[in-house]
Structures are given as C-alpha cells and as structure tokens.
Amino acid sequence: MIGRQIANTRSPSRTRESGRRLRPPTGLEQRHGTGRRAEAPPTFIRPSFRALAPIFMFLLFSVGPANSQDIFSPSRHDPIPAELEAMYLKGLKYLTTTQSRDGSWTDNQGSQPGVVGLAVMAMMAHGEDPNLGPYADHIKRGLDFILRNSNRDNGYIGSSMYNHGFAALALAEAYGSVDDPRLGPALQKAIDLILNSQRRNPNNAWRYSPESQDADTTVSGAQVVALFAARNAGLAVPDEAVVKALRFFQRCQSADGGIGYMGPDGPNSTRTAIGALAWALAKQKDTQQFKNASAYLAGAGFATGHYPFYHEYYAAQAFFHMSEEAWNEWNARNMKYLATSQRPDGSWEGQHGSTFSTAGALLSLALNYRFLPIYER
Image (spheres, rainbow, N blue to C red):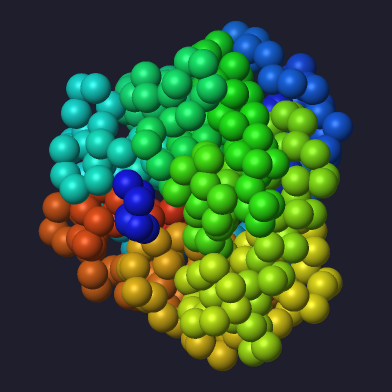
C-alpha cells in the first residue's frame, strides 16, 4: 500500500481538554499562505502537558470550589477512558519493542519511510515530551530513518509519493517540538517537492511519482494533509496550491457525495473521508462539497473499508470534523472494534503488515488525546 498501491512554532503543545497553548510560539509565526521558508528550528525543549501536570494541578485546586466544580463539568472535562489508555499503551509497547536499531521495522512495509512516519506520529500523539520522554529514543530513531531516506538534492522521501506524503507529515508534526536542526531544511525540501510535482501535473494533484501526469485521490490526500501540517508549522504554502487540490477532489465527487479514485465513479468511504478531511483542514466545512461528503459518510455508518486501519486513520479525522455527535458515535464504535481486534502482543494485523496496521489503529484513537497539531478542529 505505502510502496505503491495503498500499493512546530511551530505548533505548541496543547492540553487534551481544551486545545489551549501551553506556551507561545517561538520563532516563526503561524502563517496561512504567507509564511517564511523554514529555517533550522532553535534548540529548545518544549515541555509536554504531562511534564507540567503538577503545576496545573496546583493551579486547579488553588481556585474556589465553584470554579473547580465548573472545570470538572462534562462540557469542560474530557477524560480518557481507562480501556482506551490501556489499549494505546499496549500498542505503543508493541511498536517500541519491535523497532529496529536503524529506526524501521522488519515486517511487511515496516521499512517504508511513510510507515515509519506514521509510527513516529503514533508515539508523539500520546503527549509525552518527544525529547526526554519514554518514547524519545524511538522517535529519534524513526526520524533519523526518514532523514536518511530523504534525497539531499530534491527532498524526495522513499520511492513513492505515498511514502513521501506520510513521511513529510511526520516531519511537519515533529518540527519545532523535536530538538533536531535537520528537520526544518528537510521539511522545506519535502514540501517544495510536493508543490513542484503539483505544478507539473495537468490535474493539479498527485499520483505515485513526482513526475506523474495522472492523479488519484488517495495519493493526493497524503500530500494535501502534509501541506496543511507544514502550513501549521510556519512554512509557506500558497493558497493557489490548496485551491487547485480541492478542485481536483471536487471533480472526483459523485452526485451522492462520495469520492472516487481518479474521477467520480466508484466512490467509497475511505476516499470520501480523505476528501472530507481535505475540505475540513481548508476551513471549508460550510461548503456543499464537505456537507455532501459528510452525508455520504454518515449514511455509510461505521465501516472498516477495503484497507482496514488506513480507513480508520482517515475516517476518525473526518468524523471528528463533522460534528461532536457524529464523532462520539463513530469513536465509540471504533474503540470497540479495535479492542476486539487488538492482538495479545498489542499489535493489529492487516494486509500491509502489523507496523502499518498498529500505527493506523493508534492514530485513529489519538483524536481522543489531541496532542498532534494536525488534530485541531
């Protein structure tokens, strides 16, 4: 799948409950279409929410009883269910104990940079300090692997645009929170390659190779999400690139709101979730295109799709942006499904290997934590 078929400013830390910043951005401001090119991020260690927990608890209990009661009301507090936490930790234990010294994994697709990127994001999504926390060494090894597989001349990561998109997304999510001066330049080159590939493509979208002259919605979805993550991190992403990419998704949307592969024919839930996410990240949830895609997904209900865990990864984000009611219902069913399908060693198994499947499953659950910048509403 990743091989071919499916084949932070930068963003500051956020609390799970409210999404508020724990500290102001350092260096680059967040820009929307006018950001500067990335420089190597300054050397700093961004405190995690978990590391600051004692300070927050002191402040919390120093307020009066009435305020404390309001803070713990359902509308303000979003506790993580114990069963979800246990499931997530079990999955992370599997990923960390099976990672190779070079930062990759040895199972099917586990040595693909895009899969390594998804696994790294699953570790970061739990919220510990990526520089000093329990997963710091594993995150560093994974990022090292991605950087070693990045072409120094043009920034191309791996051997397919699937790999490139997911790996670039991981770099964007790590940029500014992981103390590594190599991330900024590598991310900039990766984003430049995505933009240049789009300019050369008559569909203004993407497919398997940077030189492809055709396009599909799955490869394009990976590039679009990476572009938004880079924009969140302070890099310049032209509005024109976003507009043209969304027009491609619109051309692939059928009359019933579903999205097809290379056109409107044969829509399915996974590709529709990808398109819905693209419109949501572009802040176009009031458009008819997003509404029609949401209606299609709501009508399909909970489905694992043809590619399990790849589907969950995108569907979780799409339903999260649709509405609180839709998200809560889908999330509850996803938690039940993943609890029953998780193996004793903490992994999930699928046709593209246990690393890809486990990372995808965990990232579909990570919306409950909301530590990744791309997981903002």
